[in-house]
Image (tube, rainbow, N blue to C red; front, side, top):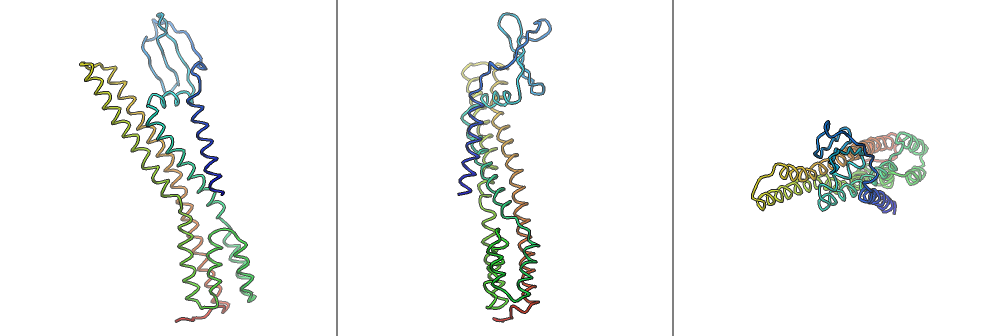
Length: 280
């Protein structure tokens, strides 16, 4: 239920932002009249200053100041909504998976040293049932693995180790759940961008072939639009890759902590003579 809520929440936010980008009226831009003798009469985009110079049609030149949000909207639409929308969907779904994993892993993180000290106190007093209760009351995969090991105390050290290893593999799989989809979106976004670029280049050459002449502005405009899908695909892949590396590092940290805790538990059981070498 928690995962469903997180996914729905992330999708609602992302879709709302997407609709805002498409619905925003370009009339909100501020304009300024410039002397045509000092400015060119052609359209020029300046990404660094978020300024676009447009020919007003009556001999004057109009300068449109754009915000970063409006600039992104313009280039998103220029790149073609067909492929841009698919790339945006990859970003939305990837962020939803990443947010769900980050929340889940954060909730799974516990103070392992404190947990081990509590278990050591209960085991030292010979109260295995209390140790089991402590593990049951503590959330997270580490407590789950230690609890499974404590259930096999009466069967000997070998049974404890096998239970820990088996349950540890299960918990590791749960921690890495969803990462395969995140990796898919990381690989899919730039490939979709490249596909959009190739299709855009084909369309540009079809236009040249139909016109029977090479117009530099026609070629440049077509190539620019084609390359926008690649840029957006790479941006999406970079964003999701950062989240993927963070989640992977978080999982590795939890696994290392889990291994240290299980080793400490076995040492505690042996030191307090709570397990034997039964089964050897």
